[in-house]
Length: 199
Image 1 (tube, rainbow, N blue to C red):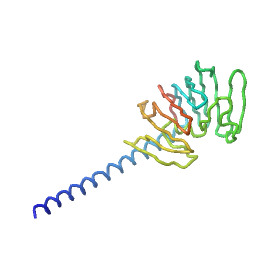
Image 2 (image 1 turned 90 degrees about the vertical axis):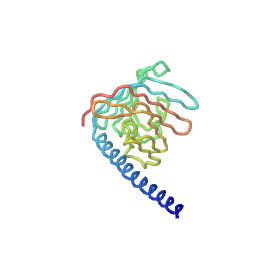
Image 3 (image 1 turned 30 degrees about the vertical axis):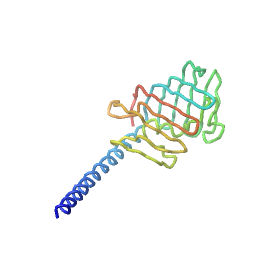
Image 4 (image 1 turned 60 degrees about the vertical axis):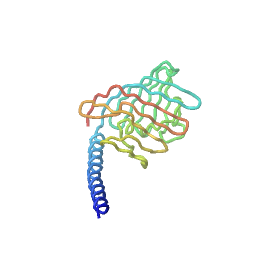
């Protein structure tokens, strides 16, 4: 009888623990949905930091200045690793790259745009969402990991995106360190500052 009594107490304890875990998971998901909705409403912001790219053929790093204005993305890369100063501008349809006094334009969906004159094939269309800590609306998301209302990892468009740290900038919590990986290509973004927020 004593064994049955103890077994009953263990079962009750496990049941209560599982009940406590379900509201916690629901709260985490609710926090994530609320945060994602707020960030998705942002139309303007600036970010500055550093970008490092490693492939089987190269390893480069550059200072990063990013200006987002509605659907227009402007990225300026500058650094000592042979990049000089490269500016990348996209309106989600066309991609314009300026480097060494030369400017080239591409259809952003074309194969030629993937590594045009910058030597890497990061998905320009998805990056404005990824850098905010959000999935891109342009592809199916798999392996999504949410912790404390923050996106920690996901797989999208054939890439694995991992968020290593976040920071508080005004009223927003935003990524400060992230990795983007696919096959032999690895990119690391370190964001030191976020400014210019508006919806």
